[in-house]
Length: 200
Ligand code: FES
Image (cartoon, rainbow, N blue to C red; front, side, top):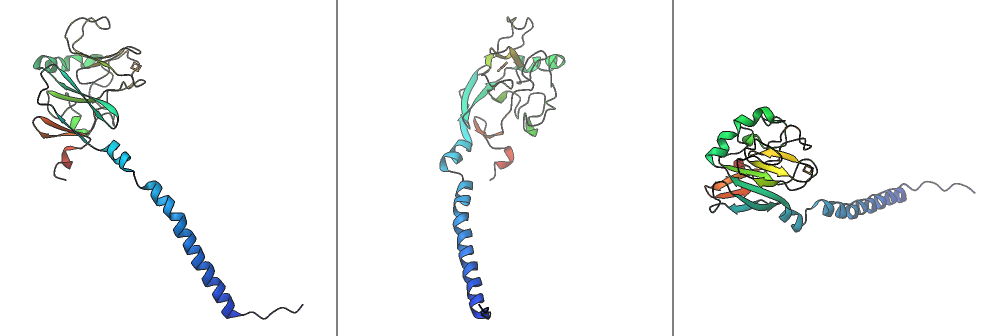
């Protein structure tokens, strides 16, 4: 059979139709992709900052909060507890908070906090995630004859000082995490926001 002569007009039409269909296909394909990336209201809420009133938090006491479904420990340290911190350095794995990502830069100091007295920690052991218990009394304890107050994880006996710094000999590899936080005022914390977000 003799070959049909090429019809440039028909070819142009087919090419244009294919391009349009292809474009529609891309558009349809893009919708679920974009939807998958758009965070749900639930996801936004789960990641949102939380505001905590600490006006009733007494010296030596602990207050609990939740942020991103994680327990948050807020402690108001007494002068005695603060004075004991430097003396513990020699017994700790990371006394200078050198391990990055365990605290924001503004909590990379001897107190691991913005204000010396108020400590904010994620209440999850860095070994396998148990909840360390708060033991603020400066007294001999079964796990430490020279206990200066801090946190003890009963799951596998990790111990942390009053800045959440882990002791040598603990299975927990790193200090407890300090989450991002800022003070909205003297008695209000915003967990999940850095101080520089204050003006935002
Ligand atoms: S989970 Fe805390 S010591 Fe293992």
